[in-house]
Length: 210
Image (cartoon, rainbow, N blue to C red):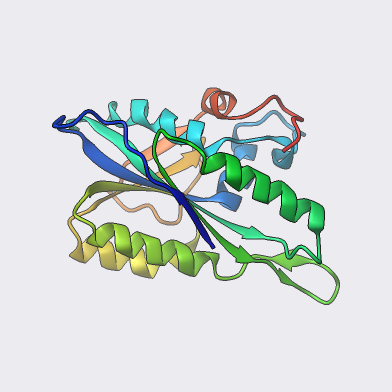
């Protein structure tokens, strides 16, 4: 499922490099433990991906020798519960998606795949990596974007990422919470290392319900 709202607020004729931000949502949420106080449950946070994306605009200006740049497309990738398995969790995420895609400040796409369930009731994501990689390939082929920022830390993305680095003109950057080792990093790759202050600016108070 893909939800999108397309709207742009960049002044006509202004030379701004367009950036596509890709968020692997479980990595975004779980990774906050690197900057949270000890014992705070990352799933108790209400992170707003729109505010998170807007925070990157200031960070893009800090890159050495970079032209003016702005995130104009946001892609969020997340698993979703089947409503018969967990109606409450399904509906909570559906409401979040509705809020995220109602923005008028940038183009937003939310890509979801139904969670897979084991016999003991545990669940895990399937197909999210494939959806992420397909979008990355599309961004690399789109002359509109000069940069793609990947908020991900999964080795499964590496084959496609290596191929794009060799064959595409798009500039690849990474993002993470704190000083976390990223398996997708290679020499020369710019990494946006987000802080506890960045987290506060894009989330509700600790313990705020989703």
